[in-house]
Image (cartoon, rainbow over all chains, first blue to last red; front, side, top):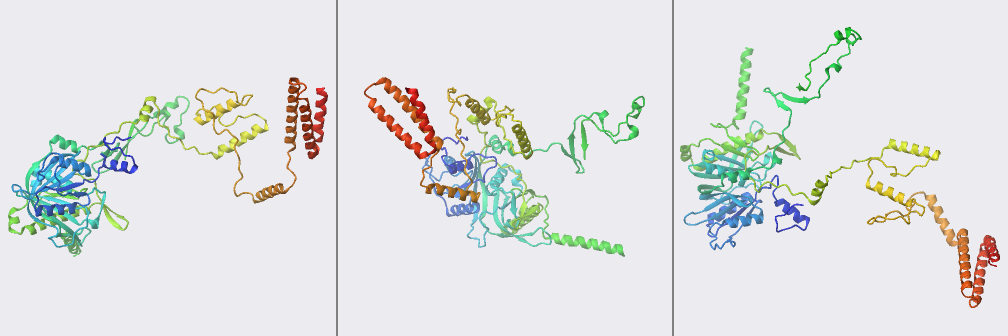
Length: 316
Length: 307
């Protein structure tokens, strides 16, 4: 009988299924995101949050102005961590996006993720230029398409903050992990460019055009919101917490096949383990002349054909 | 001549190939890294800042995005595809970028009360083999049974001869059979303190199938109607005789007792009783017809005995 985290013991099968869905599992569900506004938000921020919510639907929840009732923080524009932890438990989310606006940090977006309902990483990005979904007039991709992500720029490789940001953005936008994808459905592309301390995010719709061969030629058409971010503060997890978060259960490791080896040429070799054979009793081809005769001729007649090693045989 | 033309042909073929692939080839300094499981591409090439500033930002970004996406798509198309319900689908490999988990990996759940008990007692899970009735063995069984019947050898019932693996039901049946094979059919056998009485030991009723022999069913129904119709009461001779004999015995013993106990007072009653009993018996006997002999015979025998 599973233990259900204390408070709620399920009384119906449906409730039990619901709690099992939210419990820690071997292969996890797609990460939900909570998108919330601070107390003071500008039009830009509100619109930006709505657009990102549209990109991340259906695995996202959009909250309105939420003052923190847990700690006596009357200013809801201040980003409160206990809010994140409380709401993440409610909606089983492990990603969040908090938008706020004040004089010191105008048009601020905080991207973050949680591990075990505690904050893992938080990165603050400021919006410098923003063009919303509704401003760009073109036909949009359907909701829920798995986007292709491209990260361009050296910074994403060299700088630590950018590396974490890359991982965070991948986590945020990648969508459900699927074993196969419809070829015609690869429509959405999100392109992130890191240049001179700024990060440009563009969203395109890819059109697969005929080319001479099987692989199509890509033409892009801009659809989605376009952001010019500037990297502000970061709060990254400590190394050991980061390592713990990455620990995969043993059951997920692929099983190794034993006794199979490959040559440099690519030939596949296998090993067979045999019992010990009594060479004296080996049955080789029946040759009448070689049959054991009683008397001194017997020793001369005994011939062992073939060489076999007693224990293992290399089989090709 | 021929050699020239062959070279020409090859060169032309190469050119054609290049033309074909021109639309999808992209020149890059460094190759991109791909994580196809997540549909991600990482471009590590240096971005020319001057070019970025000269061109319009959007156009530069768009062309860069187009090139990168083209390379990503080329990589995706290299993977195996299959057709699923009229749709061509590409099979993606496992994602390679390590991303942190949402929740810690699940802990092994604590053993249940039964699991603990089983471990303590060393009980292992036994899989029930699917035993199928063997046709060949059935013939053998019947043959042996026929032999036993012919030679009048007594064979015990199923499950009473001990075998290697006796199930709970077999043992219970053996115990029941042993218990009831006493002189008084197991009525006075002691039971263990918490032993319950065996269930399902009544007579097994057999029913005719619902739709079977039509002629049989018709015959039965007609017989039933005949019995219902007849005016004569159905009399089971044996039953009647036994009942009468029991009555007589009771009468006699009662009479003996009463005579011994109260001498004069109940004399008249006794005679009345005797007369009533006699009359009844006689009437019964006459109705049966055949039965006249035995009751009167009995009475005759009884009377001399008394006196």
